[in-house]
Length: 92
Image (cartoon, rainbow, N blue to C red):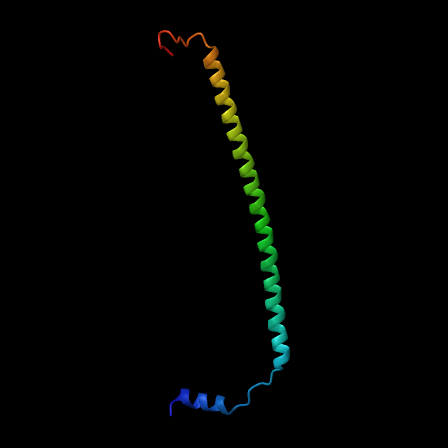
């Protein structure tokens, strides 16, 4: 037999350390519960940040669009009143 086989045989014959399975299960469950709680709170926080970010973006887009429409209407009124626009000659 090789040295590794002897080592494995001696390990096989040794008694395994006794552990309380209920205590180990409680420890694992509490750890996983804490990790899940942290992930849930972090997810909610990140979700609210995205809602606020997208809200500001939508507001800015809406304001920009209203400004563009206002400028277009203003330009149309100026073009109608402008003496440069001669309908008889077709010049602009």
